[in-house]
Image (tube, rainbow, N blue to C red; front, side, top):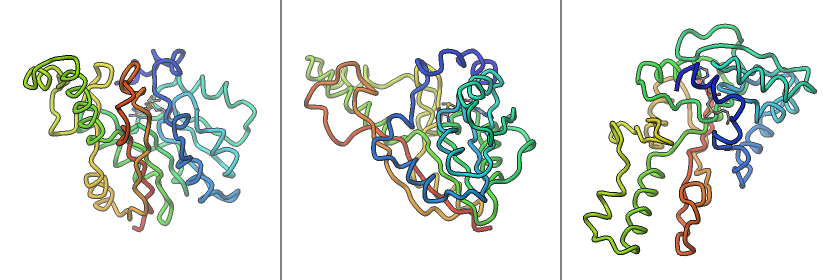
Length: 248
Ligand SMILES: C[S@@+](CC[C@H](N)C(=O)[O-])C[C@H]1O[C@@H](n2cnc3c(N)ncnc32)[C@H](O)[C@@H]1O
């Protein structure tokens, strides 16, 4: 999605855009923020949207930069977080140059590396990495390719249980998408980049980061299916949650 499209969802963000922090039942995001918290430190929320994680950062860090390409989302965030006086709002396109905010001790980046266009996405990845001070940390959440494949398998099983023959069950379950091999899987019809954990380790390693933690941030099957049947249990769908330190 591009700037205009993000602007268009700003007022209906809560209904339209999946809320990762609210569904982080193990509290992985909170724990990471608390681990690095310091009143002398700076935190940045890259792709902050309507500001779901800004109060958490503002409560634990001396200064916070809220960065997003959508000025409409930033306006909603600013209104929602007006009781916090240590947040600065920055309109910036991470796919271009990094400007308008300093490097931070902690960069939180939740589902911002979604762009299907490889050049734009690589710009976002590069600028995310360059937004972290040497010795600082990146806390990243991204969609998982393995989770998308698991969801497809579950759809095949559902189809078979509804009486479809195995070949048709597989054909019907495969979402139309431009390039699964490149991790592009549609979410609500929008081609969206999904990652392998190994891919993240390689991407970040090449950019001077040491990955310290990789976890599955798991959700219920009700995030993928309406009224999922009782037999549909673990393993559950997930996003990747990752903590990495910038070593150089
Ligand atoms: C899926 S939303 C996630 C928002 C927020 N992190 C959250 O968890 O609620 C992705 C956000 O990234 C922003 N974004 C997308 N591309 C961007 C870019 N090139 N530069 C800066 N922000 C971008 C969008 O405007 C949107 O607010």
